[in-house]
Image (cartoon, rainbow, N blue to C red; front, side, top):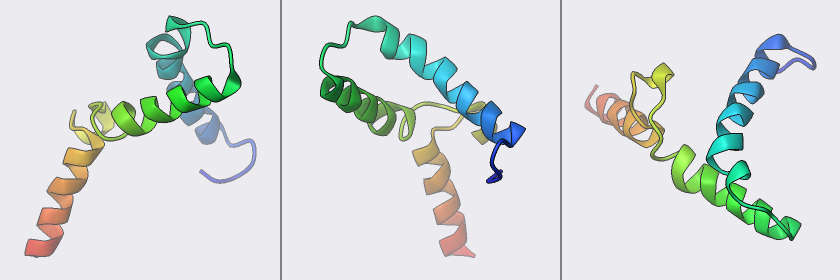
Length: 76
């Protein structure tokens, strides 16, 4: 990842948008752009990042996964 036009970067963002579209964007008609930006921020930082379970993290939320690994690193 990190190179311009990398297929890995494209797959990552396509996966993100395929989740964002039905869960947030398609549910409301967004009039002002600021309202949409605020809703996207809340959707990402309020649900997607801290609470949504991810298959790549053994079906843990990112917050739970980080807490599990932070505990292991402190104990080690």
